[in-house]
Structure formats: structure tokens, C-alpha cells
Length: 189
Image: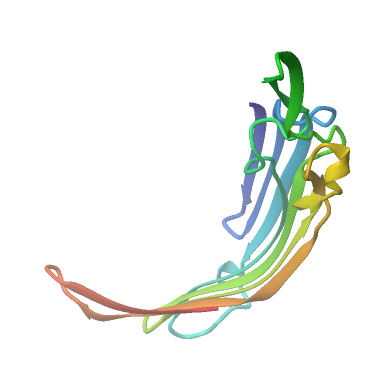
């Protein structure tokens, strides 16, 4: 495994944030697609810092948006891109049998995620609300084949999955003294 990573963060006028990263990964388990490029970017706007924002009791209010792509290469054995063969003795003759049939076209599984969120901090309540959409493409799948080929299955990129939903967190300090802090938090999805 080999990786190169670059990050960039910017905060402007204590109101606006921008972050980006780029990642170039390589793994030896793939025969032809060893390298994958992945990245993400996010924007944030601290609305409570704007002059027009006048909500009594609200100390902090922020809107966020982000999108990113992450690669997955693990979980499919040591070298699913290559044929793995075992040498055996068959009636005093050399025989080879597949341990696993490799797929030279196997490539990175890609996870793409979009997120839109709000953060609120006030003197009476703190809350976070997020909408997310996750898409996985080129998912690894073990495809069964006819055993007359000399092997039973081969790993392929042959699946996709979409998840989306909302997540929230709300918390409140019930007791807050110098010696004791009791907080109640409710999470949901």
C-alpha cells in the first residue's frame, strides 16, 4: 500500500470555511488498476457571525455542505486480481489447481457521499441536523461460474448501493456547576 495525501483548509473573516483534500492510493492486490484518486471538499458558513443575524439566546449557527469520494480495496483476499494456484501430486504427476481465480479487471470500489447540515448552540439547547446521501459503485461481488472452467467463482466489480437519510443530535446541560456537569443527549437517524 502506498498513499499520497494533500490537505487545504481556509477560514475567512471568522464566517466562512473551506476544506479540501486529495488522496492518491496504490495497492498491489489489483492487477491493472493499482492506483486510485479520491478527494473531498466542504464549505461552511457561520451565519451567526453575520450582522443581520439577531436571534436572542442563539450563540452559534452554522450551515455546512460537503461531498467526497473514498476508495475501498480491502476484504477480497490477498490478491483477487491474480490467479492463485496450488501445485499438487496427482498419481505421481504434477497437477495445478486454482485456489482462486483472479480478475485482472478488478478495480477500486468507490463510495461517494453528500452531506448537508446545520449546527446550533444556544444558552438553552445544542442541536445538529444532517441530511446524507451515500452511493457505493463498483462494489465487490463474488460471482459463481460453471465449475467446468476449473474454478467455482470470481470476484468482480458488480454492485451498487444507495443509502440516504437524516441524522440529528440534541443535547442540554441539566446541571452545570463548577464541580458537576450533567448533560442529556438524544441521537437519532
